[in-house]
Length: 503
Image (cartoon, rainbow, N blue to C red; front, top):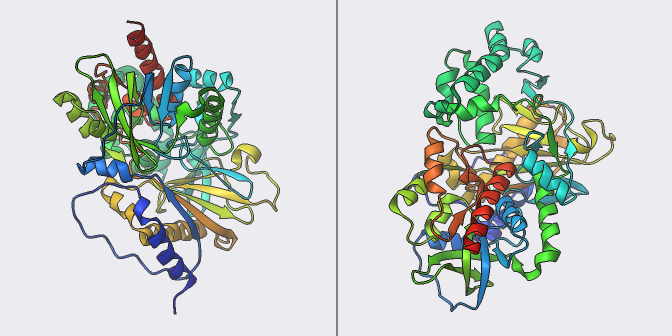
């Protein structure tokens, strides 16, 4: 007799496998999905980006070619935060934006359940990101301040201010408590003294003098924020994170639904001004410079048919791993730099609850769960003090090591991850399981680049202009994946675009 959950697995697998994200990895056996101890219908919605055209490009398949039917000053490839920001910065020009998905937002796509807005990716921005703050003010999308700091949850007990006086409350040996507290001042002192020279070291190296529990924490924090463990992370990036990790020093802001609210606000602002020039469902598969004329031809698929447009300037606002496939004729050194980037697979599990569940702080971190952290989706509205009878959502971040990317291709394995999320929440916060109405999964194969040592030199080579082809994704900067990075990269590309258009 099939359980309801087994039936759900079978139906979902047949319905969605063709649209799954992910990329070919070296062949290795995939583990057999475990059988749930208690069959439950939890994961009711599995979504992800569509990569049919992208994978065809990656695999070298020949795609049909169409003649050029239109010309524009600027063609922007990608409708995530960077592409939308590029369009905003060049809104006075004749531009066309092409996005492969039917919705805009990239890693910041909004979802909603029973009136609760929730993120499928980006969470917040900070007060120090002044240019992004100004952008949101310009479009009338001022975020809300995040109340309070974050917590580190150990055996169900949350501790806030764990890099300050709260470290004394951590259920750790005294040395570990002392190291949590003192590491912040000491590592920030080193960050201010050595600066970008730290980029040649790993974060793990500068954490060696401290208790291993501190490294264990950062091995959880890093994958959720910049894609890598301490051994994979630039010491400059790790040290800089002490400026904002924990949520107390740099005031945070966000929207209901996280940064997806900001992306949607930007898209909504652009739609009436650009009309049909803001075009979804359009997957770009080739960008070809014209040798005897200024500009390039952009080829894309829409509704199963090929299209081509000419642009005086092209802004590629997609990750470098894809840009390297679609931009023809890149210099060898630049192409090699793009291929050297690594990207972490990152499913997000929105756990929908019929009644409020655990909400000890805004962002809540774990050392022993299959996921790294969760954010109560309505914290921005209630700061943990909402009505007891309301429905709520926990947005659970579940980054995976690069070598596990292929698991996102197997629906039963993703459903088992959802069960693991539910079981870990129940272990730390008994009574959560019975409140779960459903779990919504959004899976992305390559959303976040790993901020590895040596990125600064790598980024400079990978992101330089290739004639009329410019690059504007957040991975065009040396920091961490962020909406602010997308905006800054877009501004830089827009300035260069204006320069070329006026020449």
